[in-house]
Amino acid sequence: MTETSGPILLWLSSRYENLELAQAVLSHLCRQAGVGEETEHWIGVALREAVANAIKHGNHQDPGKRVYLSFRLEGDDLMIVVGDEGEGFEPGDVPDPLAPENQLKTSGRGIFYMKTFMDDVSFSRGELGGTILAMRKSLRPVEGGKGVETR
Amino acid sequence: MKSTVTTRDAGDVKIIELHGKITIGAGDQQMREAIHAALNGGCRKLLVDMKDVSTIDSSGVGELVGCFTTATHKGAKLKLVNLPPKISDVLTVTQLITVFDVFQDEKEAVASFG
Image 1 (cartoon, rainbow over the protein chains, first blue to last red):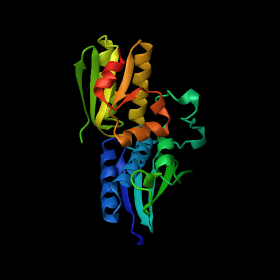
Image 2: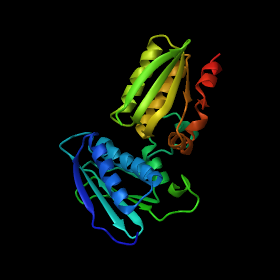
Image 3: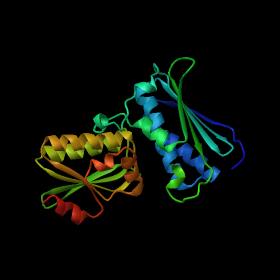
Image 4: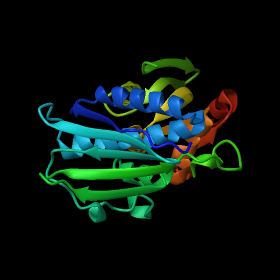
């Protein structure tokens, strides 16, 4: 894939049902781009974590607050941006889920999964507050077969 | 795929079969409710069958860990069987795969409870 496609932009109300809509758009985009099922799966895991975080921690499930979502193909890269209308947060404050004292905690793994399954993940503060999460995934096929292509 | 949870017995082992997505706002709560119901009903041997789980997110993983801790505190054992590769990967990268007893065969898993 070498073309640069225009972005797909969505504004979602803060409802978990909209995770399915976000996933459906990703699937459509991946089919268009010829992305393999394995890679699409792991991007989908990261996307769901990002949107769920925006709904839960950013917008506190207030359906009146929206989640911004954009997908853009840039050369061999898929760029995903997720924004919320919350108070913002400091990603450095999130405890390491691999630390022994956190191993049995019931939360705190979402950002780790995003960073594991995507190539780049960054956070910034939106102009009107809230958090902007940007993720990049290379769609260039990787030798090594199933599974390896995602890591 | 819609998330559903079904249960059945194999002797004194309660087998909790998860289907579809174990994700926030959907299958995660159903899984917790089914496991807690079994624990509250006196079951002390729980086997979670994940053969038909298509995806799990951090919320589902968190619920699974929470159920494991609750079961342990009640003197019960909670084990996993039939993990699809993608589900195993999700547990492996967070090193949780070492927390659970994981089996690939139901008979072997049931027998392991003693």
